[in-house]
Length: 394
Ligand code: GLA
Image (tube, rainbow, N blue to C red; front, side, top):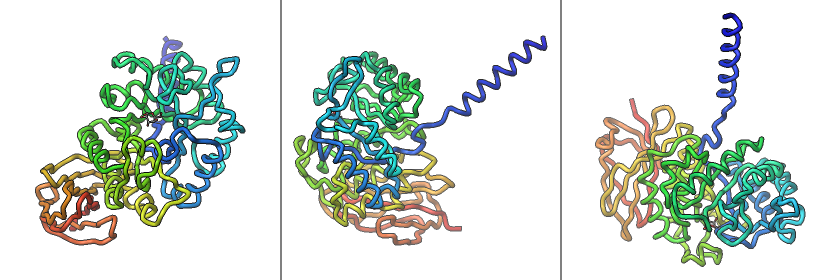
Protein backbone atom coordinates (compact mmCIF):
# COMPACT_ATOMS: atom_id res chain seq x y z
CA UNK A 1 0.00 0.00 0.00
CA UNK A 2 2.74 2.39 1.06
CA UNK A 3 4.69 1.56 -2.10
CA UNK A 4 1.57 2.28 -4.16
CA UNK A 5 1.09 5.68 -2.45
CA UNK A 6 4.73 6.59 -3.03
CA UNK A 7 4.40 5.60 -6.68
CA UNK A 8 1.25 7.74 -7.09
CA UNK A 9 3.01 10.62 -5.32
CA UNK A 10 5.98 10.37 -7.67
CA UNK A 11 3.77 10.21 -10.76
CA UNK A 12 1.78 13.27 -9.64
CA UNK A 13 5.02 15.12 -9.04
CA UNK A 14 6.32 14.26 -12.51
CA UNK A 15 3.03 15.30 -14.13
CA UNK A 16 2.89 18.60 -12.23
CA UNK A 17 6.47 19.31 -13.12
CA UNK A 18 5.81 18.58 -16.80
CA UNK A 19 2.84 20.96 -16.72
CA UNK A 20 4.84 23.70 -15.03
CA UNK A 21 7.47 23.32 -17.72
CA UNK A 22 4.95 23.50 -20.57
CA UNK A 23 5.58 27.14 -21.43
CA UNK A 24 3.30 29.10 -23.74
CA UNK A 25 5.18 29.91 -26.93
CA UNK A 26 4.20 33.27 -28.44
CA UNK A 27 2.22 34.49 -25.38
CA UNK A 28 1.69 37.77 -27.29
CA UNK A 29 1.42 38.11 -31.10
CA UNK A 30 4.87 37.62 -32.69
CA UNK A 31 6.52 40.82 -33.95
CA UNK A 32 9.26 40.98 -36.50
CA UNK A 33 10.25 41.43 -40.10
CA UNK A 34 9.99 39.03 -43.03
CA UNK A 35 11.91 38.96 -46.32
CA UNK A 36 9.03 38.10 -48.66
CA UNK A 37 7.17 41.22 -49.78
CA UNK A 38 10.25 43.29 -50.50
CA UNK A 39 12.89 40.78 -51.64
CA UNK A 40 10.96 37.70 -52.76
CA UNK A 41 13.46 34.86 -53.31
CA UNK A 42 16.33 37.30 -53.96
CA UNK A 43 17.73 37.03 -50.47
CA UNK A 44 21.16 36.34 -49.01
CA UNK A 45 23.04 36.45 -45.70
CA UNK A 46 24.26 40.00 -46.28
CA UNK A 47 20.69 41.27 -46.56
CA UNK A 48 19.67 39.47 -43.37
CA UNK A 49 22.63 40.91 -41.49
CA UNK A 50 21.84 44.40 -42.73
CA UNK A 51 18.24 43.99 -41.67
CA UNK A 52 19.28 42.79 -38.22
CA UNK A 53 21.50 45.88 -37.91
CA UNK A 54 18.74 48.17 -39.16
CA UNK A 55 16.12 46.68 -36.84
CA UNK A 56 18.55 47.06 -34.01
CA UNK A 57 19.45 50.71 -34.82
CA UNK A 58 16.09 52.04 -36.01
CA UNK A 59 14.39 51.50 -32.66
CA UNK A 60 12.32 48.62 -34.05
CA UNK A 61 13.92 46.09 -31.75
CA UNK A 62 13.33 48.28 -28.74
CA UNK A 63 9.70 48.68 -29.84
CA UNK A 64 9.29 44.88 -29.77
CA UNK A 65 10.09 43.65 -33.30
CA UNK A 66 11.98 40.52 -32.43
CA UNK A 67 11.99 37.94 -35.23
CA UNK A 68 13.84 38.21 -38.50
CA UNK A 69 12.20 35.70 -40.81
CA UNK A 70 13.83 34.21 -43.85
CA UNK A 71 10.97 33.36 -46.20
CA UNK A 72 11.11 31.19 -49.34
CA UNK A 73 14.23 31.03 -51.51
CA UNK A 74 16.98 30.22 -48.98
CA UNK A 75 17.18 26.47 -49.71
CA UNK A 76 19.93 24.72 -51.64
CA UNK A 77 18.55 21.17 -51.64
CA UNK A 78 19.81 18.28 -49.48
CA UNK A 79 23.30 16.89 -48.87
CA UNK A 80 24.28 13.21 -49.28
CA UNK A 81 22.77 12.48 -45.83
CA UNK A 82 19.54 14.19 -46.82
CA UNK A 83 20.19 17.13 -44.53
CA UNK A 84 18.56 20.33 -45.72
CA UNK A 85 21.21 22.84 -46.79
CA UNK A 86 21.06 26.53 -47.68
CA UNK A 87 21.94 27.81 -51.15
CA UNK A 88 25.75 28.12 -50.88
CA UNK A 89 25.78 31.20 -53.12
CA UNK A 90 23.21 33.06 -51.07
CA UNK A 91 24.27 31.84 -47.62
CA UNK A 92 27.98 30.91 -47.89
CA UNK A 93 28.53 31.08 -44.10
CA UNK A 94 25.55 28.83 -43.38
CA UNK A 95 22.40 29.45 -41.36
CA UNK A 96 23.94 28.70 -37.95
CA UNK A 97 26.45 31.54 -38.35
CA UNK A 98 23.60 33.83 -39.39
CA UNK A 99 21.54 32.80 -36.38
CA UNK A 100 24.53 33.55 -34.14
CA UNK A 101 24.78 37.01 -35.70
CA UNK A 102 21.07 37.71 -35.34
CA UNK A 103 21.10 36.44 -31.74
CA UNK A 104 24.13 38.60 -30.93
CA UNK A 105 21.94 41.62 -31.76
CA UNK A 106 19.29 40.44 -29.32
CA UNK A 107 16.98 39.26 -32.13
CA UNK A 108 15.58 35.87 -33.13
CA UNK A 109 15.73 34.04 -36.45
CA UNK A 110 12.82 32.52 -38.35
CA UNK A 111 12.95 30.25 -41.39
CA UNK A 112 10.52 28.83 -43.95
CA UNK A 113 9.55 25.43 -45.32
CA UNK A 114 6.50 23.68 -46.77
CA UNK A 115 4.44 20.53 -46.08
CA UNK A 116 5.18 19.03 -49.51
CA UNK A 117 8.26 18.02 -51.53
CA UNK A 118 8.60 21.56 -52.93
CA UNK A 119 7.77 25.06 -51.61
CA UNK A 120 5.57 27.65 -53.30
CA UNK A 121 8.55 29.07 -55.18
CA UNK A 122 9.73 25.56 -56.11
CA UNK A 123 12.52 25.01 -53.55
CA UNK A 124 13.22 21.85 -51.52
CA UNK A 125 10.65 21.36 -48.73
CA UNK A 126 10.11 19.09 -45.73
CA UNK A 127 7.53 16.37 -46.50
CA UNK A 128 8.84 12.99 -45.17
CA UNK A 129 11.84 14.77 -43.64
CA UNK A 130 10.00 16.50 -40.81
CA UNK A 131 12.02 14.97 -37.95
CA UNK A 132 15.35 15.47 -39.69
CA UNK A 133 14.54 19.05 -40.75
CA UNK A 134 13.25 20.01 -37.29
CA UNK A 135 16.54 18.72 -35.85
CA UNK A 136 18.48 20.73 -38.41
CA UNK A 137 16.50 23.88 -37.56
CA UNK A 138 17.15 23.29 -33.84
CA UNK A 139 20.88 22.77 -34.50
CA UNK A 140 20.94 26.02 -36.45
CA UNK A 141 19.26 27.70 -33.43
CA UNK A 142 16.16 28.68 -35.36
CA UNK A 143 13.38 30.28 -33.27
CA UNK A 144 10.40 30.29 -35.64
CA UNK A 145 9.22 28.21 -38.59
CA UNK A 146 6.73 29.42 -41.19
CA UNK A 147 5.32 26.27 -42.78
CA UNK A 148 3.57 26.72 -46.11
CA UNK A 149 1.17 24.42 -47.99
CA UNK A 150 1.89 24.75 -51.71
CA UNK A 151 2.07 21.51 -53.73
CA UNK A 152 0.10 19.62 -51.06
CA UNK A 153 -3.32 17.94 -51.38
CA UNK A 154 -6.36 20.14 -50.86
CA UNK A 155 -8.22 18.06 -48.26
CA UNK A 156 -8.29 19.09 -44.58
CA UNK A 157 -7.32 15.73 -43.15
CA UNK A 158 -3.99 15.65 -44.97
CA UNK A 159 -3.30 19.24 -43.93
CA UNK A 160 -4.02 18.46 -40.28
CA UNK A 161 -1.74 15.40 -40.38
CA UNK A 162 1.10 17.16 -42.16
CA UNK A 163 1.02 20.16 -39.84
CA UNK A 164 0.83 18.00 -36.73
CA UNK A 165 3.75 15.89 -37.94
CA UNK A 166 5.96 18.98 -38.21
CA UNK A 167 4.66 20.47 -34.93
CA UNK A 168 5.50 17.23 -33.10
CA UNK A 169 8.92 17.12 -34.73
CA UNK A 170 9.62 20.68 -33.61
CA UNK A 171 8.51 19.87 -30.09
CA UNK A 172 10.86 16.89 -30.04
CA UNK A 173 13.75 18.87 -31.48
CA UNK A 174 14.88 20.09 -28.09
CA UNK A 175 14.43 23.76 -29.01
CA UNK A 176 11.51 26.15 -28.55
CA UNK A 177 10.46 26.96 -32.10
CA UNK A 178 7.32 28.97 -32.77
CA UNK A 179 5.25 27.25 -35.47
CA UNK A 180 3.41 29.42 -38.00
CA UNK A 181 0.87 27.50 -40.08
CA UNK A 182 0.42 28.95 -43.56
CA UNK A 183 -2.37 27.31 -45.55
CA UNK A 184 -4.05 30.67 -46.28
CA UNK A 185 -7.24 29.99 -44.31
CA UNK A 186 -8.48 27.58 -46.97
CA UNK A 187 -9.30 24.75 -44.56
CA UNK A 188 -10.49 26.96 -41.66
CA UNK A 189 -7.30 26.45 -39.64
CA UNK A 190 -8.74 28.53 -36.78
CA UNK A 191 -10.75 25.40 -35.97
CA UNK A 192 -7.83 22.93 -35.85
CA UNK A 193 -4.39 24.54 -36.15
CA UNK A 194 -4.05 25.11 -32.42
CA UNK A 195 -4.61 21.41 -31.73
CA UNK A 196 -2.22 20.53 -34.51
CA UNK A 197 0.47 22.45 -32.59
CA UNK A 198 0.53 25.86 -34.28
CA UNK A 199 0.99 29.11 -32.37
CA UNK A 200 -0.47 31.06 -35.29
CA UNK A 201 -2.17 30.41 -38.58
CA UNK A 202 -2.67 32.48 -41.68
CA UNK A 203 -6.36 33.18 -42.13
CA UNK A 204 -6.33 34.54 -45.69
CA UNK A 205 -4.65 34.77 -49.06
CA UNK A 206 -1.37 36.71 -49.44
CA UNK A 207 -1.57 40.40 -48.61
CA UNK A 208 -0.84 42.85 -51.40
CA UNK A 209 0.34 46.38 -51.06
CA UNK A 210 -3.01 48.05 -51.76
CA UNK A 211 -6.03 49.15 -49.75
CA UNK A 212 -8.43 46.71 -51.41
CA UNK A 213 -6.31 43.80 -50.23
CA UNK A 214 -5.90 45.18 -46.69
CA UNK A 215 -9.62 45.69 -46.25
CA UNK A 216 -10.59 42.34 -47.82
CA UNK A 217 -8.22 40.54 -45.45
CA UNK A 218 -9.39 42.56 -42.45
CA UNK A 219 -13.02 41.73 -43.29
CA UNK A 220 -12.25 38.01 -43.12
CA UNK A 221 -10.13 38.25 -40.00
CA UNK A 222 -12.59 40.49 -38.07
CA UNK A 223 -14.92 37.51 -37.82
CA UNK A 224 -12.42 35.22 -36.10
CA UNK A 225 -11.85 37.06 -32.80
CA UNK A 226 -13.17 34.12 -30.85
CA UNK A 227 -10.23 31.90 -31.89
CA UNK A 228 -7.33 34.14 -30.83
CA UNK A 229 -5.53 34.14 -27.49
CA UNK A 230 -2.11 33.80 -25.87
CA UNK A 231 -0.13 31.19 -27.82
CA UNK A 232 -2.74 30.86 -30.58
CA UNK A 233 -3.21 33.74 -32.99
CA UNK A 234 -5.06 34.50 -36.21
CA UNK A 235 -2.49 35.69 -38.76
CA UNK A 236 -3.91 38.00 -41.46
CA UNK A 237 -0.43 38.17 -43.09
CA UNK A 238 2.30 40.78 -43.07
CA UNK A 239 2.17 44.54 -42.64
CA UNK A 240 2.65 46.27 -45.98
CA UNK A 241 3.45 49.57 -44.22
CA UNK A 242 6.17 51.51 -46.04
CA UNK A 243 6.28 49.37 -49.20
CA UNK A 244 4.87 52.16 -51.42
CA UNK A 245 4.26 49.83 -54.35
CA UNK A 246 7.82 48.54 -54.71
CA UNK A 247 8.60 45.81 -57.20
CA UNK A 248 8.69 42.80 -54.80
CA UNK A 249 6.22 39.86 -54.96
CA UNK A 250 3.48 42.04 -53.52
CA UNK A 251 4.02 44.42 -56.45
CA UNK A 252 3.87 41.53 -58.91
CA UNK A 253 0.56 40.52 -57.36
CA UNK A 254 -0.94 43.96 -57.89
CA UNK A 255 0.56 45.85 -54.97
CA UNK A 256 0.36 49.41 -56.21
CA UNK A 257 1.05 51.04 -52.86
CA UNK A 258 -1.06 52.77 -50.21
CA UNK A 259 -1.27 56.24 -48.72
CA UNK A 260 0.28 56.74 -45.29
CA UNK A 261 -3.26 57.04 -43.89
CA UNK A 262 -4.00 53.56 -45.24
CA UNK A 263 -0.75 52.15 -43.86
CA UNK A 264 -1.59 53.69 -40.50
CA UNK A 265 -5.02 52.06 -40.72
CA UNK A 266 -3.45 48.66 -41.34
CA UNK A 267 -1.24 49.14 -38.27
CA UNK A 268 -4.27 50.15 -36.19
CA UNK A 269 -6.49 47.31 -37.39
CA UNK A 270 -3.77 44.65 -37.09
CA UNK A 271 -3.01 45.89 -33.57
CA UNK A 272 -6.67 45.70 -32.62
CA UNK A 273 -6.93 42.20 -34.09
CA UNK A 274 -3.98 40.98 -31.98
CA UNK A 275 -2.37 40.02 -35.28
CA UNK A 276 1.32 39.24 -35.62
CA UNK A 277 3.06 42.52 -36.53
CA UNK A 278 5.46 41.41 -39.23
CA UNK A 279 6.91 44.31 -41.20
CA UNK A 280 8.16 43.57 -44.69
CA UNK A 281 9.43 46.93 -45.98
CA UNK A 282 13.08 47.91 -46.42
CA UNK A 283 13.81 48.84 -42.81
CA UNK A 284 17.27 50.11 -43.83
CA UNK A 285 15.61 53.01 -45.64
CA UNK A 286 12.46 54.10 -43.86
CA UNK A 287 11.00 57.57 -44.17
CA UNK A 288 9.77 59.43 -41.09
CA UNK A 289 6.12 58.58 -41.74
CA UNK A 290 6.82 54.83 -41.92
CA UNK A 291 8.83 55.01 -38.70
CA UNK A 292 6.03 56.91 -37.01
CA UNK A 293 3.57 54.17 -37.99
CA UNK A 294 5.70 51.13 -37.18
CA UNK A 295 7.18 52.51 -33.97
CA UNK A 296 4.19 53.97 -32.13
CA UNK A 297 4.62 52.42 -28.69
CA UNK A 298 1.03 52.98 -27.58
CA UNK A 299 -0.34 51.23 -30.67
CA UNK A 300 2.09 48.35 -30.18
CA UNK A 301 1.04 48.13 -26.52
CA UNK A 302 -2.56 47.56 -27.66
CA UNK A 303 -1.37 44.74 -29.92
CA UNK A 304 0.88 43.21 -27.30
CA UNK A 305 -1.53 43.53 -24.38
CA UNK A 306 -1.04 40.44 -22.21
CA UNK A 307 -4.76 39.65 -22.04
CA UNK A 308 -4.39 38.57 -25.66
CA UNK A 309 -7.92 39.40 -26.83
CA UNK A 310 -8.69 40.07 -30.47
CA UNK A 311 -11.03 43.05 -30.94
CA UNK A 312 -14.68 42.41 -31.69
CA UNK A 313 -16.52 44.20 -34.45
CA UNK A 314 -19.31 46.06 -32.60
CA UNK A 315 -20.65 48.49 -35.20
CA UNK A 316 -20.80 47.72 -38.87
CA UNK A 317 -22.50 49.97 -41.38
CA UNK A 318 -21.71 50.92 -44.96
CA UNK A 319 -19.06 53.47 -44.07
CA UNK A 320 -18.09 53.08 -40.42
CA UNK A 321 -16.81 50.06 -38.52
CA UNK A 322 -16.13 50.15 -34.78
CA UNK A 323 -13.96 47.57 -33.04
CA UNK A 324 -13.53 47.09 -29.29
CA UNK A 325 -10.57 45.28 -27.70
CA UNK A 326 -10.52 44.55 -23.96
CA UNK A 327 -7.13 45.20 -22.38
CA UNK A 328 -5.54 44.09 -19.15
CA UNK A 329 -6.80 45.73 -15.94
CA UNK A 330 -10.22 46.65 -17.21
CA UNK A 331 -9.28 49.19 -19.85
CA UNK A 332 -10.19 49.04 -23.54
CA UNK A 333 -9.09 50.12 -26.99
CA UNK A 334 -11.59 51.30 -29.58
CA UNK A 335 -10.98 51.72 -33.30
CA UNK A 336 -13.24 53.65 -35.67
CA UNK A 337 -12.61 52.91 -39.34
CA UNK A 338 -13.90 54.99 -42.23
CA UNK A 339 -14.17 52.53 -45.12
CA UNK A 340 -15.44 55.11 -47.56
CA UNK A 341 -13.62 57.31 -50.05
CA UNK A 342 -14.88 60.54 -48.50
CA UNK A 343 -14.43 62.35 -45.20
CA UNK A 344 -17.05 61.26 -42.68
CA UNK A 345 -18.37 63.44 -39.90
CA UNK A 346 -19.60 60.84 -37.52
CA UNK A 347 -20.99 60.33 -34.03
CA UNK A 348 -20.36 57.15 -32.08
CA UNK A 349 -22.48 56.31 -29.07
CA UNK A 350 -19.91 54.97 -26.61
CA UNK A 351 -22.63 54.36 -24.02
CA UNK A 352 -24.26 51.93 -26.46
CA UNK A 353 -20.89 50.21 -26.78
CA UNK A 354 -21.01 49.56 -23.04
CA UNK A 355 -19.07 52.61 -21.81
CA UNK A 356 -21.71 54.29 -19.69
CA UNK A 357 -20.93 57.55 -17.86
CA UNK A 358 -17.88 59.73 -18.14
CA UNK A 359 -14.91 58.28 -19.99
CA UNK A 360 -11.53 59.53 -21.09
CA UNK A 361 -10.43 58.81 -24.65
CA UNK A 362 -6.81 58.98 -25.63
CA UNK A 363 -6.07 59.16 -29.35
CA UNK A 364 -2.91 57.04 -29.51
CA UNK A 365 -1.88 58.52 -32.88
CA UNK A 366 -2.26 62.25 -32.02
CA UNK A 367 -1.62 61.66 -28.28
CA UNK A 368 -4.58 63.90 -27.45
CA UNK A 369 -6.99 63.25 -24.65
CA UNK A 370 -10.64 64.17 -24.26
CA UNK A 371 -13.37 63.41 -21.77
CA UNK A 372 -16.78 62.50 -23.09
CA UNK A 373 -20.10 61.48 -21.64
CA UNK A 374 -21.83 59.00 -23.91
CA UNK A 375 -21.13 60.25 -27.43
CA UNK A 376 -18.03 61.00 -29.47
CA UNK A 377 -18.23 63.15 -32.58
CA UNK A 378 -15.47 63.84 -35.05
CA UNK A 379 -14.38 63.68 -38.63
CA UNK A 380 -12.50 60.74 -40.06
CA UNK A 381 -10.56 60.93 -43.32
CA UNK A 382 -11.12 58.38 -46.13
CA UNK A 383 -9.67 54.99 -45.09
CA UNK A 384 -8.51 56.42 -41.78
CA UNK A 385 -8.78 54.49 -38.52
CA UNK A 386 -9.07 56.47 -35.29
CA UNK A 387 -7.57 54.55 -32.44
CA UNK A 388 -8.39 55.32 -28.80
CA UNK A 389 -7.69 53.84 -25.43
CA UNK A 390 -10.65 54.21 -23.09
CA UNK A 391 -10.57 54.80 -19.35
CA UNK A 392 -13.49 55.14 -17.00
CA UNK A 393 -13.50 58.44 -15.11
CA UNK A 394 -14.67 58.17 -11.53
C1 GLA B 1 3.05 31.68 -50.16
C2 GLA B 1 2.90 32.37 -48.80
C3 GLA B 1 3.68 33.68 -48.83
C4 GLA B 1 5.14 33.39 -49.13
C5 GLA B 1 5.29 32.62 -50.44
C6 GLA B 1 6.70 32.13 -50.66
O1 GLA B 1 2.45 32.40 -51.17
O2 GLA B 1 1.56 32.59 -48.52
O3 GLA B 1 3.55 34.35 -47.59
O4 GLA B 1 5.71 32.66 -48.06
O5 GLA B 1 4.44 31.49 -50.47
O6 GLA B 1 6.85 31.39 -51.84
